[in-house]
Image 1 (cartoon, one colour):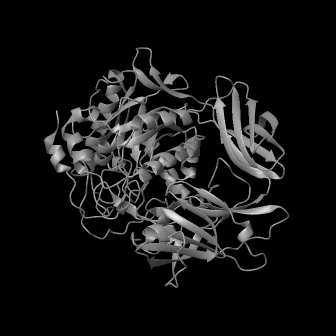
Image 2 (spheres, rainbow, N blue to C red):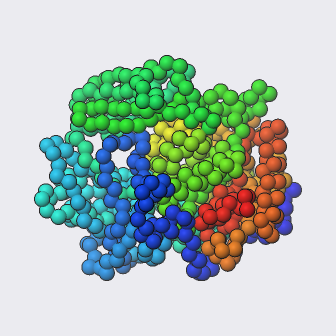
Length: 614
């Protein structure tokens, strides 16, 4: 039965151009105040390596105060590649926070007909014989051209994946060097991947951001060096397979260590820029949430030294002893108790104010009884996944959505009212693509490339136990082909091709959203071997006074106060837990924290109040 009262109460309202009330997390407050780091204060320790699966001992952060300028550009969609540096005015901006984020110090929205320019001095060190300086930008939203001393050294499109450039030949030894970045971001005025961002925020859509929003840094490396590493630990075989990309010729030596002690070693020659090694690890200790055991990896290639890690674990969907399809970790059924993680912050938007802030969210979820975070329509920084690896928190990773303007009729109203539509609509062909905002071939190409890049970026993290490809029909197209492509890239993890509705009878999960009907297990008539999960439900709203961004709030059921909120939420979670006995393989509660107008988080947006513990 559909709860029409709840549906009507949760109907999205037209966005209002109302200023957000400033909210500061404890970590962002310290940054904004320019507070010095007291000796021994753990929350403010320097961050760990920005790429923990391919780390060298020395790296230099370029985060901090840059200058930025906004330049009018009616032709911004093409001009970003060749536009001249503007005269200004130039204003200070704190990187890696987008200019729209309070922590940037700007509070300025980039418009689709503007270009955003960054510049800063590049204090390049003196390079030894054969050394190279590689610049890393870990996320720039959306398209950018990068210059060193006026020489274009890189260009990149795609707002969620990292890229790098060897800038050595553009440096001027013994002189001042300068770094500049030109950015174009149409946000939802374009069709590119954008996730939950919208220029007119409101309801489930959040403030659009732009520009550099993850770490900027560089490292000095030998000319002959490791360029990539993929590690696959196979428990049944007791071995680690390493695929190493290199620049140069020679031999790669690899070591696997457990608690500092070497347990395996091997060497292999480089052939055509590649090297593959298989290292035997006797009686490997398995990774699990209860025992998140990691093995360290060390690589040596000439003068280059690289650190990484891996873990032994398996994850699959198969029948349990009663024949019910479930997610199995290391061969044992595991009931997924998940919570939706948007990864947004009032002071940093998509950029967490610190690594300690990420740790706070992961640990808060665990303390509330969850064993899984669904990283929702966002690729988080690698430190987050490394933290989950160490903490034993499972992650179900969504792909980022995009496409044209979404039709509320097709992505909300029809599937909400007519459950039969969930399995009877195709996403193949021109008509379906128009209906689901996926008509632009450039969008479809970017989605495929970013999907593959996301799998490649995160495949080495044992905490990541599955992929979600499309959510609620947003820009959905050819889900069956997409599922096959991801399986080919990564056969070791389950795939949820669609989350919410418009199921295409593929993948490993029958994944539904249920905000407006009684919680129950629905039969999977299309593909009975899939596990049934409720990948979104709940959404009880409570706006805690003094901890909200807006006077209006959005959720699926409003609680009157702390006691009412806790009673409603705990009741929903208990009902979901009880469905395990009826065949439910897992759930994802909406959601971990409030975000702007959404007040249905278990934590307030500023992370200062845990609503279930109030």
